[in-house]
Image (tube, rainbow, N blue to C red):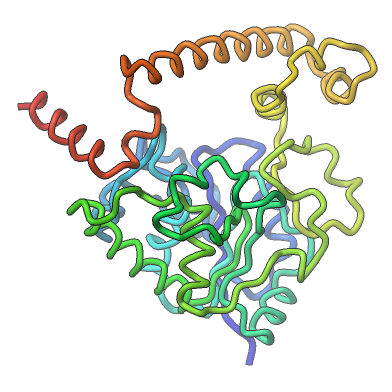
Length: 329
């Protein structure tokens, strides 16, 4: 019997690019149902021309009794799994749930992939990071929770069985109570939480590469949208961006900004077709941001400024909450 599945297309904005990404997704989905899962924790979503749209609000997170923890920015950035639980609670009837960020692509039939996962009794399909877990920036913060043999995985495109999402939701709820009570000292990032909780529950986990080529899948560098047609048999792709977002992402994470200015370098070639004024403006903005970050880290070392990840530590988070309540009173 064929397994039912929901596809959760996740985004925090809507424009022509996300519409094209959704169209690409529709082309590889047969019997599955596609839902646009949009972040509304900051503001309501604009009109989206699709039959099934689910907003994810702060009220949804509160209703599920999930800790609203983040280091900076959106709660859903630090906890990319939260929207999954909101959708799961509203759409509980599916055998599998495919989650895909707006900047990811799946380039073969999802019906075929789901059938293969069901055949192999896979509960979680994700992407183990290419480097050692000990090189992951968050590694030391998670040692007390998951130990030195922890797993780290990206879930920009991922598949979960029904029982996997039920388990993960229950674990987040238990952890939320423990964090509030101070029994859990650090709020685990999604990249560690998802694979380790699946493994600890003895559910079946597999890597993307088991089911298709993933050469162009990682957290960075981005692929420009126009390059998608030249990828051949690549099945999983991330991140895919367009226009200014592509330029900004490429610059933001590149250690050597001068490489964009030197003719003949790979980075210069990637940006030579873009408006030079745009590139120059974004390079200047990135250079300024890095100087500000260096100064901020200096202030943190001499304890004149809170660490950027303080809210993920139980003690710091409780202090911040108390200060917020006091100021509002």
